[in-house]
Image (cartoon, rainbow, N blue to C red; front, side, top):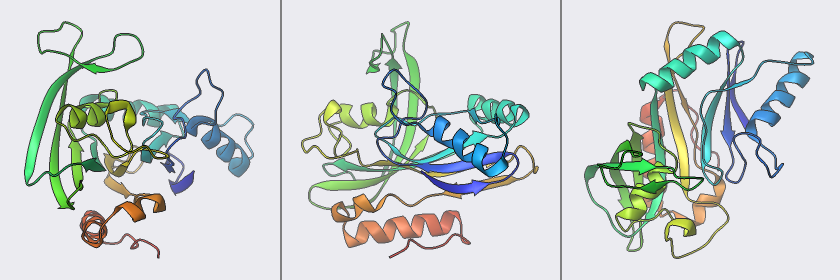
Length: 237
């Protein structure tokens, strides 16, 4: 788990695919526990405050922000609740898509398994995202996705329902299994709770993506992140 940013208010990390966001019944490693241990070591405080304000699915990689005070946790939680935070993902999906589009569905979670439901289902919550095809091959398309809502498994469900499951996501119909799905939270933009300004955090997809990406796809990712943060370093060789 790489630390992308650390100050007295925020801890921003890059979660690898397969790592839990928070503890569950498995007892497997998770972001919240690891982050708390890191802050305990760094500060020398036996019980540092580390607040979880959002989550990523276990098989998804990418940016997570954690609060280092209760005040920051409240401020960040309000931003997520009011949808003033900008979240962008990169996804490699099966099949070919072109142009841009918007997907709107309804997702319910009866028990532990999220599922798409008709709009008139009383348990359904609106799920909406915008997508843009950045590059493609004969088999795959690289999508930039902007979430307008944050429902469980939202991107995975909506892409699969349209016949374009995320590569590696065999749970939702992908043809080829792999260690982790090819879905990455690549950009997070928010109002810094301690500095009164808008800040942007970016993260390149993991190196395990590279064998799956064409040269055009890799260049598209570099352009996207360079435009988002002109001062950000380019991807390491």
